[in-house]
Image (cartoon, rainbow, N blue to C red; front, side):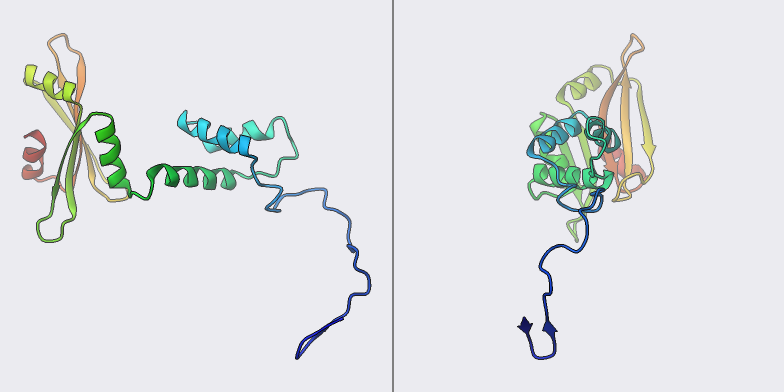
Length: 184
């Protein structure tokens, strides 16, 4: 018998008073992935396999698998967070671009130090643009990212009518100064 100030606890029979659950859905331990499954999940995400297909892969050999698609999403988010090593999204773009050998230009707002424009281009693309600067096609996609910046794609064309990507940019607005800055 255990006692406290306002309550008492009597244990009449210390055994379980119910049968073991046949269905383990909702139990954290049953939904836990093994170390091998975690490694497989990371490899699948590197190959851009959607979470629903990862879940299907784990459930096919084991129909009683209690893993949910939300669990896969949470693991993928944790893998992404670990890979980014504490950097935010913009810092990750700058870091990965530098690792890949891309040239990155960015512009901040003078008084608040907020990033207003960013341009990423491969050195070979810049060289091709300098060789064939005659036809440039620019297209903007509006507010498809969490910062509501416009995605600008600059595409060049060589004399054999083939296209090449010159640069990708995020611009804050569609003013002529932003386009001029990107093309410089």
